[in-house]
Image (cartoon, rainbow, N blue to C red):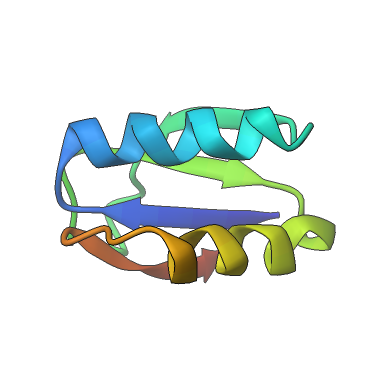
Length: 71
């Protein structure tokens, strides 16, 4: 499982929506305290879809993207 972290809530939700449009099951969770760099919510998705997530991040400009971490 992966966690995508953003500093802006709207970008978090946009990213989740984009992943869903590719058929990826996503979850919206409170960002774990250990990551300590976000708007408070993050997107979770299965590790098998990491390349889909990375492609979305390359094509779209997310100013607040902080990273993808292992859950």
